[in-house]
Length: 109
Length: 121
Image (cartoon, rainbow over all chains, first blue to last red; front, side, top):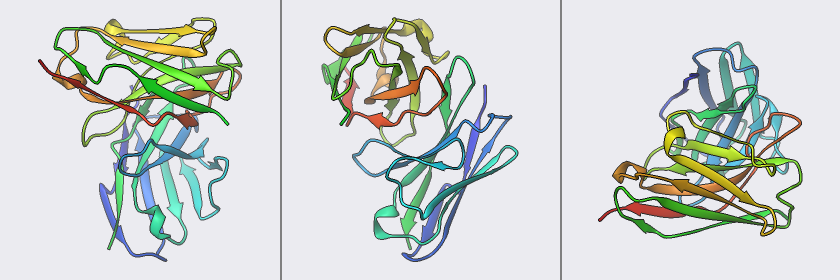
């Protein structure tokens, strides 16, 4: 079973700053790595899939990258609506079972 | 526009079976996607439960597999979840979602708003 470890658990930043969120996989995930944003009381929203592709309608300030088993979500300049919890998710090739990281809470400093 | 809506009892007794239905609108459930269930215990992270294809093929989280049944009704454009022998640990918000296409691996991209299920006597 692949385990995803997200860091930091909480990130405190101000609007306009750059946010860097990390997700480390315990083994190769063949780039089937996604990022979700979740606000209180709402369902998760897909931001990034295949490690670096933005989902439909996602602003360009969100970007994803990978280096081996290390994945990064970057928000270039934080907007007030970006403060939320972010989850990474990986899925296997077939059957496409999947797991989530434990989440990073991005809070306003 | 694809929309999903979960429905079912909000309270289930311990040892009983949790049953939820997801109604899909704006998209045919037979059109080449898997459809999935994900849950989130209060204050905790997300856990994938399982997914189903319109042909009835399913796959589920190995940790829940023995208790999970997922079915589909293409005539009603609905799919359902049954989770047996529930305990307090199954208390969560349950989401249904449009899961991966069957032609390429993708994450779930459209989610319902979620429904809260509490397991208590």
